[in-house]
Length: 224
Image 1 (cartoon, rainbow, N blue to C red):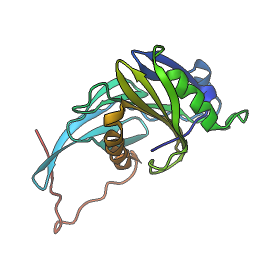
Image 2: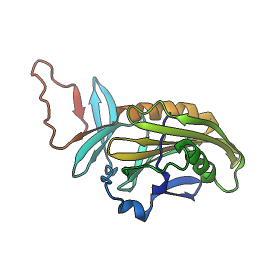
Image 3: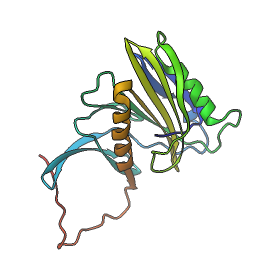
């Protein structure tokens, strides 16, 4: 799935059973940090080869990006550094993606995985039962970057839930990706989220836009 962490920059809070990863005030002033990408997204539908797709478009002063959304998924802009994805047809399921500046150096008192395990266990709703870590280690599903991932299992509201929390260190920022879903939905949603993350790419605004040869026009058509 995914992974990573520089925990001195994080504050974790539980709200309505969902983990929110908040940037601490000291992180904002950290020397050498580069602003993380702005996750405020605009949805765009387009057709390709007669099939309708949806993607999210991102843009800030330094870069632009896009990510393909799984069929039926929607998004909610929560803050410039936090994006929520809502899977279709999966009760209680939600993805929370948060970006943070990447500091120059990481604390060395504990391993990233151990810190992430502690934070994952603390993130579950306070009335949860039978809480346990079912997977921990390096993540393998994020296309780039050093990463760590923990999956925690717990019972709440009469269901068995799984929650994955992955921390990914990109070259100039850090990303925390959390998926919460019932045990029955978790694996299928994990696969869909993986594909979406693998489609997510950024490019600098100053990068030249390649022109397509007239002999091979694009079949992609925005939907008005």
